[in-house]
Length: 552
Image (tube, rainbow, N blue to C red; front, side, top):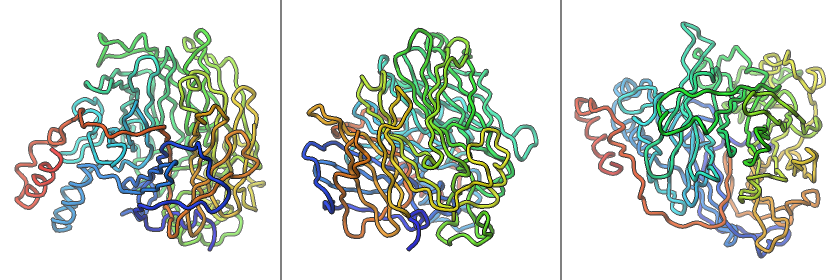
């Protein structure tokens, strides 16, 4: 049936079923809740990132699996208007619309479940039912907004972070504009955002952080809020990942904003920033919360030649052979065109000096970094020892000529173009020792299969714990459990269910317990809309009023 990734864009399904152990023995002490999210397929524009969110929740003790679509009021409004209005009327009304897709990452803030997307505010949903509670912050709480009367766009980081000492969450707000009349270059300013879980979203402007690609993740230490610019080239003239002309930048710009400047008195005003730069593009990053003086220890999972903003099309041809792509890949992204390091950097938070750097990399194994799994308990967040990094690997049938040529002159290339793989580099799961930056243990999945982003599950008895990961085959998906520090022994348990097959997923999260939260934090969806909607023709007004009655 071919490679699992060739089937990742098949239609998404919702599930409510019980997993059956098909190999090994399920650990008695394996408990807690795993969440995994991605974009529902198919998408209107045939680009994998453009689908609304579909969320999977697995109760590990009961082995109960539920997959359901994420429902937000603006997406409900968008869908209802499209169904109710003539195509031309809807197209005119939706021009420039940016409804929330909520398809990138799940995060836990205390006992609250927060879901994120790219061009939207974070969303709080009920951890058990996944029912919508609220956007985090009204549109008027953000300084950078792409205006639209019904569907304004608020770009934030898809990975916010909880502060261990201050009990708040940090993220950011950005907006990238074309540079003058350019159709290839964008630029924008960074705003740091802070939320205490109850009040308004506070923001501070960081004009010294000149963005030209965007921010995907925010991390925090005891003294600094840190962002890295993601390797994701945006071009105003490119739509839905097509017609790309520029590679993303081959380095990572790092911005450290001191918490001592993020005060209530300076809200809405400018604050200084420290800048650092390291080779290779950033994908995800985190820092040890505890510092040594002003030295920050930052870890970056580099993407390095993996272009996430290119949509494969029927016109693309496989590198070297010139053959056509598998039809199931149209709308997917290209395979990476180089191996992907994980870097550890010690940076002086006051000066930006990179005092020490070390890379973890095996070119025969580490291609296409996914989101890592981490021990999310306080001690490990303060100073982590291990990281569970998943890789999609590299399928040579997904190496396309246009992307290979786009990154052929990458100045930090690990694998020369003429030595790009001709055989599959399998998907893998690696436990990385963060002290030595070496492999503690590793597992490669069978050819043609891929593992998604893993979670680390602690052992309540004090053992090493487990790494739990969803693995896709061409015709099914299953859950695999590994002893966290003995990955090379293979999975201790595999569980699945007849007919279970997920479409492409992205990022995961773990929580030891769940409880239904009262919807005690609300931001009015009605207040997000421009009052001019009341002057629209009756069919549109009727639809909008009905959605507002439901979501308010």
